Length: 476
View (cartoon, rainbow, N blue to C red):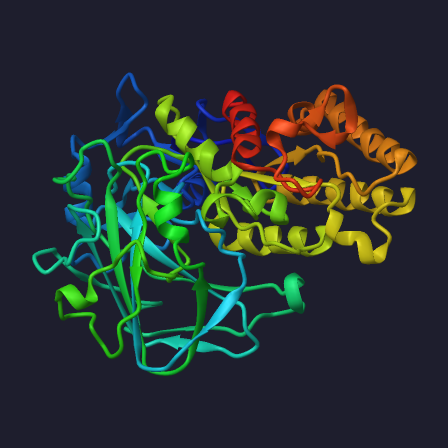
């Protein structure tokens, strides 16, 4: 079978199949690549000059509409028909639907509550999957969930077309208890809904804003979800990271998945992001960048607590016409070891194209993060993750570490030497985001450039994250 690769992938024999190239592959291998959205069958598909997949002359709307009523719409968005595999609705985690950091720490949800959340997409979409996370030691059940495209911000959605979510074919879904870890190093459990053939609708309130999906999740029993601070959503929507994306949320009592009044509409004053994210499917390919790390990637202490470099980079890339979207799983307080474990779990669940991570975290301090031995251990751990990513068809991206004023001169020298050996890996074909080069004060490389410092000697302000995002956007 002839396929055009949509992203770099390794075969079982470690052969690299390069994005954009056409290969004549064994059917089993070709179908495995098609099944994860990494390739398209050029025997039944053609591409226009912009690289947009056109399958048997069908438009994106027709593709999505064709999914309705079809028994097999797989989790990866492949539409099954009587004739075999049809058009992949290329999946990408929306660049904004994870902006507040899925790994911000779970909060208990009271029983008998409906979480009403408005998630922004990056582009017009042809389908979606709901992404729930559990950061508690007890499993919880999503009693029912529904989703609909909405035309306006904070929409009551009474006239929207609603789709009932299923989880492995069931109307309810259970998110397992966290598998390991404690405190900030806890490893969340993930649950992804089945594919929903929901089409985005044009915005009627402001055409400069991105498409919206409203999700209503009802929990008959106690659950766990991502909460944010009062005012965080409004602040973020108005901040430099938004790029036309808008959140809204509400948590009314009772099952309001099918009742629509002003008392249930999502608002910027809301404090919940449940589900934690949405996996949007787009009519043409989008590459996703998974980010795992600590508060320095989460956007801790920035506007809305989430004006992070992944969020801003997603907006910058879209504005530049580049179809990339970052998904931020960074968690304040997490150690390097925990963030890499989290990265592996997320890669298995979400299958991104890229995985960005560091080789050291200030949160390793309890284990002696300022010693050469700990930097060496972190570097070795990062190299192992580079190898693991490549074996799993994901391109690894290493990041250099910015300054921390708590380090003395000798410790800062170790940090910078660690960055130097990370940068040397570029000669081996490893992509590196050299954040240290934009964050260090040229007059004193042991401190953050004052214009980018939040003020505590460790964290970056909005401008600092924007500078990091500019560096990321220039890589693609």
